[in-house]
Image (cartoon, rainbow over all chains, first blue to last red; front, side):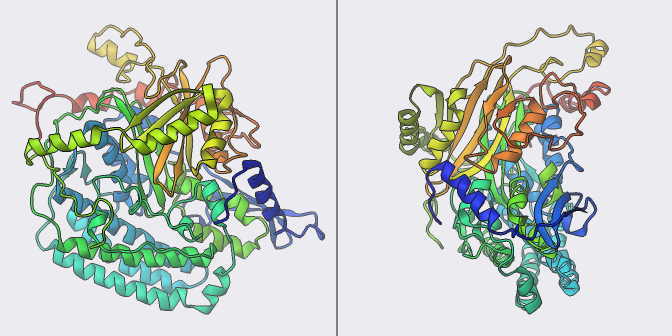
Length: 391
Length: 241
């Protein structure tokens, strides 16, 4: 990572890096290509307005807002348990992971800590959400690049994780299982053994994906060297999660600055980084992350302590006056909630810092000079969920 | 087991734990936060009188309120101090909601026969403040795993701030969002157009005096939730089972 201390120097660097990628010698009249809002590569309804010169992208501007649901406004008139059900819908592929930072922030303000068993199960379900989310990414990204098989395998094997999440929480996609002070329920009988089996299947799926997709020559030629994001630029745009680690920045909120209430320090696992910063690196890092997540789950399943899953909290949740920001490493990157409370039943202001919003804001920079098919690789590998952008 | 700083720590977490231990743990936490004090001291040295207020929650977070003329300088100073990861920019409207403390719609007040409440005073959060609107932003230092929350007062008669886009490119979209939701403009921003809303949208939705229409036409569902359970004393200290 090169250090640029003078900010004006950085903007020069950005401009320079951007301009060398576009050959303006043969500039033609150009054409505007509208991608979306219903394009399969957009995971929802994102529209990209790309200005083209031949096959080359001169500028690409994402237009969001087709799915803006105004969460930051509506949570000001909803109680904390109600908000918990709402924010499940932000990143709908890893829903449980959305609940955790919000609950942790509220717990921090209230001075409540969940019992150890609840912390363990929270961490397990958090990582299961990650497995479910990223396994679908692997299949979906393959699908976008023309590898249909990967898509089918991903949908097949994600089902094992969703079944486990469903049997524990009652919800396949929107568990609404986390509570201030613990969890809604304890685990059902036989769940731990079944989860081991499911995670083994997912580990096998990762091996399969490594051969089928990541090791595929066509896949590699579509992704290697495409959409390169240097570490300096990635930090500058606030990219987080696998997108940042694929640019060589060794930072994971699960390891560095993990908020109290999650027990990642109780498992032996590794943070993977990749120096290239291209579409391939982002996919590769995510594949390794799925493996690590499955390993974390398997280790924690063996060490769940006995005890209650709910601390003593008032039946009517009133969060004391104060402000708190808690962020966790969600499947898509850093997800955080800034809660400003006035001691009411409802929060005074909640700022939702979602990962995809920052991750996708780099598209105008990274797409410049790319070719149209590469735009699909770039969008797919940055991996965003529309609900996570528009909130 | 991997040994991270917190590894091997015995957590006295659940309410069934003895209270003496948790009290001792609390006291250990309350001691001053040397690292964040040092960050604050360095920021104060660089920005001088522009640092108007600060708040440190030991072991957790740091809030710094700067003068709005030094908003961009604050970003540059923090960036050169290693806070290179851009987190977010947003704003807070500290005006208590004119629709009642709990967002009670006037319709609810008619139904319940209550008098409209007198407006509560504006009380800003950590690090203080003088104005209704405050812009809040967060930067993060990956090496030391510490973050800074910056706040700046924005007076009502001139809702503007210098932009951060030249320091952190990621601020571009966040400032657009803040502009359309709160009406705070960012001087020098290259493309301050709407992010989510239609271009002809009137008003700024996240301001407290912008009514949530779905809320105005129906009684607040939260009212149902706070009714006591049958047979339970009407006490807010009711404990979960």
